[in-house]
Image 1 (cartoon, rainbow, N blue to C red):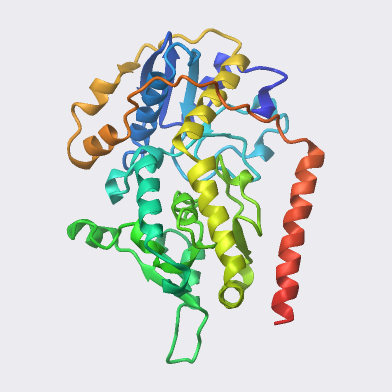
Image 2 (cartoon, one colour):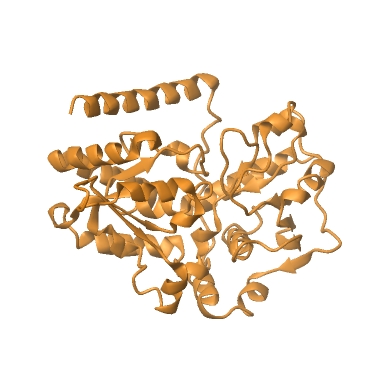
Length: 384
């Protein structure tokens, strides 16, 4: 929220975010109201709103009055270059951004369930990962790097299939990539799409979709080292990930050779590879627990509210939403996931302390540390 710290946020600024928003959410006196502008892809808007209702239930009387515009798409829409004075940019909450965009990061909808692809709420899924990983020892896992998903959403994903095992051509890049046909998966009841059961490979590949991908948190949770193909996109937790500790960075310009080396190195150094997998999954389960996700949300809305230069009021065309009005009309997996992610108690503990924003020097140090890891890996590859 740095662009608006000095000037604050006016009602006019919020209104100017409307062309890039799917919906507007206003909280007044602990009650939520939604004004919809256009249809979101799948149920992103529904489960985002559901998450905010759970926040209100978890922290009654503590969520401030806010007036928020949400953009639920993937591609950056508010380029910093279009706003030389960043404070004139309209504040828009989004799930991801890159270094060229001005946006306020918010946890994506799938933390509360992704009904279209049968992905359960994050809190329940982490329990599945713990159970599944407990049955798998390192030697029992397939000694390759695994990825499964829809390659048609980005050229970066399609290019990954060049690295697949090609025995006819005598190429072994240590990659096992599989295309996920979501229509076929839906027809067969998602029998082959259980995320926790995809942890039987020693290494998991993360690759962006149209922008970032919600799959990163599931890949991290596997206890397998995440081989992350570099991407400019980030979401609300990615700055907490440390290259060489939580994941192994992969240069997209030489992804096949880089993945092959990472797998060969990990198989030759199983203790170090295991530790990286454990660090990544520990981050996913602990630093990204639903307790902390909700606390981040409350911190974000509290800071945003403090910047508002007007008192939020209910828009004329807004409709009040509550747990009953959202859940009761739902059927099938949508209702199931809503009930599974419903907050059933009031948080009693104090919020975690939010660290201050990174200074310019800290950002520089992070970049240097990251580059040192990449340089060391490149040297290892060249000397291999």
